[in-house]
Length: 236
Length: 345
Image (cartoon, rainbow over all chains, first blue to last red; front, side, top):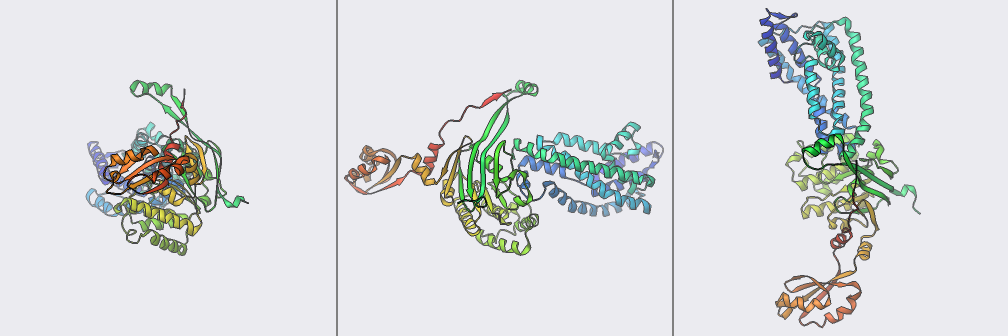
């Protein structure tokens, strides 16, 4: 998500809030500004380019040389994420200052919320990497996954809280968002960093994140050898 | 006596088959294939068996689509065989154990493992970490590779700024930093100019001699095979056709010699190529004339008898008798037709 994208979402929701008498379900203009600032921070810290990079590697035949190194090709992708996220995280500092000055963003999590966010964000970023890996693995069978990737990213945007806070979604959509992994990777850490998450739910939240991360890890372990065998019929 | 520890590669009845879709062009055929797909089986490699001892340099020959690259992929672990077994350095390649991968290198023509945007030495350092090479050993190996491949002016430039020949040399170095015992080289000189080809050949020869590495090399350039390989495997339509010395292959498949006759410049044959052709025509099939020279193909069995008469030709200056170029021999080997593919629903 770019800064421009966040500004567009922010502008839209500020306009909606103003049109509804100043707030939408407890979110006024400053609260929206704070939410999208927190969202940008979490987004940068959980950023992943694995799906696109891995699929590109499969399509271009680069996967062959990666498979013959004594290192899992996905570990290589994960290693690349670390400097990427650090760099993106560093860019948030000036953007954060801008958001507070220009939009009066009211980002004031309690110490408890901040500590919770520090626990949840690394777990969320790991789960994001695993999810991206699973989607990327589809390229081992079908090579071109652009359409699938678009659907995946669209679900991420709408059900992860990137377009609108998940708490503002209709009830059915909220239920679906809580059932899928996107909210837990983006929306949930954003709510904690924004100081709006319920700290009493933290143990349950951590349990859900940990369980889903483990499930993703085990699924990847099962999928990978089958995928690399399927790739042999496509050509590497 | 050859023991199992002396064997670098053991392939037994290796077979690899693919199921490929068969579809006529057009929208209707595309829609039909969604419901009922026709496929055909392509047996890229069929029942191939051979052994290669440690330290051997073996050439792997065959026309396009013969099964060379597929065999190399099965031996390096990139592909599972459909049936049969392969063992390389005592390991099963398809398992891709990290210990096994640290002992081999597969270099495939144009494929790259260097990062495009950063200098080669940064990629080398990354590979050092990936392969777990300790610094002292890495430094020693890198210095040797820099010297052998003349890389000193290249390794500080971003890879995208290097020419194809320069990039291939850096790719070779990248593939050998971990000092592999087994090299699979798939068209290593593809696309390189003559000078670059020669440098790569010299390097591979010196590396194999210096380290005792086993090399299995495919190439369409016979100069590569002749310069490097003492033994060749010939594969065609997925089947092994020959396993032995290159010279033995030529002797077995070629029953002719090429005789190059040179005429004195002032003689009738030397002044007029058509006269030269007429003069040598009775001795065999004239295949080439060039200035004062004429090349004629003579059956091997007739060479001795005809050479005596050749010396009596007017204006003859000199003649040489040579084997057919290996390229022509290989053309004849590869001329046989392929079996018909089987289409199934």
